[in-house]
Image (cartoon, rainbow, N blue to C red):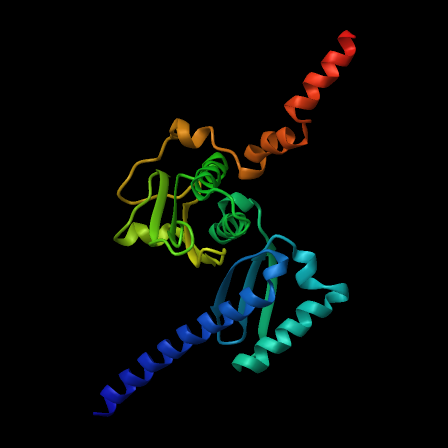
Length: 246
């Protein structure tokens, strides 16, 4: 009976550690959002708890003379009762290969009211051009006009395992956009370059479909339209030409 209680205590400890890690990750994601938070790796040892935070702007996390990172370490220690936490900052080498950052980019464009299908195609192109072996982006929610039914858009390219042990090698992130029409969830899945799957040979570079390879972000697409708005009306142009002839 005591042996059984010992196993339950160990299992309970594992569950509590997992929940605490999730809470720490959510806390750091909120606190370091402006620093371009990508993801966090937490490793517990008998002596210390190592917390490696990946961001696009390490200077904002460290702060002047290390004040910001020291305050963050103290907050993590008090809030989550972690003994001797050590926070290290890692700069993100390639933004296009980080699912959370790409999801945030897509969400920002969606909230600006841009065309969602174009956004997904352009974002997928950026990810694949960065060298990803595979990627998938799903947008679901109030994609139609306000009051319309929920829809789901999905774009993908390359090799992306969906089940089994190989699916653990896929990096996933999800963020919700809140445009005027209603909430839209964006899920980004990326297989980083160099990933080796036990059930597949070395992947070759994939030729993207034309609809994706020619995609551009909405700002670039809308630029000609803005230029057209600046042009004078057709009537004014005709009057100017008549004056020149006279």
